[in-house]
Structure formats: C-alpha cells, structure tokens
Length: 193
Image (cartoon, rainbow, N blue to C red):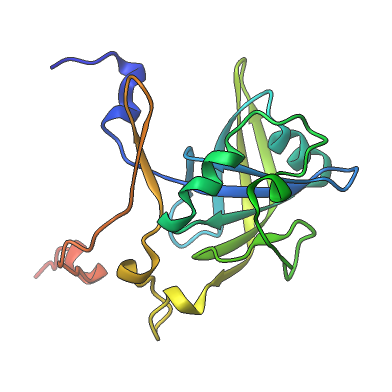
C-alpha cells in the first residue's frame, strides 16, 4: 500500500511529551508534543518542531525556558485535555487537573507524576514559512524514582511512557514494550585486526 509522504506519522511511532511553560503574565501552559527528539548523543540539546501559532512557542520565545515532561500511559486523558485549543489566558494545569512540580533550574514547573523532567533553555529557533524548529539545552534532567532502575535507566514495565501513531482519522496511543534484547554500544563498532 502506498501512502502520501505526509502520512509518515501513520507508520512512525512518536514519543508523546507534555511541554510546560509560563507566559509573561504568569499563566501556566501544558501542551502535548510528538515532534520532539534529542540531538545526537551525547550532546545535551533537544529539538522540537512547532506550528507558528502555538501558545507554547510564544511562551518559549518570551521567557527562553520550558520543561519537557514524559507522561506515563496512565496520563493519556490529561494529555488529551491539554491538546484542546484553549486561549492563552487559560491555565491548562488547572483544566487538566495537573499538579505543578517545582523545577530546579528554570521557572516553568514540571508536571507531578511524570516519568522524567527535562528542564530546558532556548538555544536557537529556526523559523520557516509554516513552522519553527526550537533547539533547547537540557540544563537539568531528573527521572522519577518510581520509574527508574538503580542505574538510572527507565524501567519500561513500570513507566509505560506514552507514544502515538497517527491514522487518517485520529491518534492511537500506545507505549513501548521491552523486546527482551539488550545491545551494548560496543556491538556497533567493528573491530579491525
């Protein structure tokens, strides 16, 4: 079956995060995001793509700060409430029943109950005709102890981090399952004799 190129999200699972910001007026904002990725390991930068007309983007531009919250699958209804097109003066934390979690380095709060929190500062914005690419530096990273192994890795079975696959009619939410295959980084390097 052939699909049009814009249907790439129908076949590519995307992580779902909630990005929390604060407006200059002090209004808390939480918005779901699927177009987000770390930039090359071991760098500390993260990239998100945004439509130009988003309260979250306006807040990041105004304050230079945001928090990437990784929600567990149990937060799917809160994520959907935050997906609604609320006007900028509405506190989406209140609308979705989210509990703010004080951040360590940046002003916007994280979201209590998340799997992890990435506190970020704006590094660069690359603007195109219809969208912007936002590069942020992760200045503080913390994993919820409930969802972490002793070594600091994610416990997938406990965390069930939310992800999505789009369809022609909507979004199917899911979470990753351990494929029971661990690969050390050394497996990727060919040894030359």
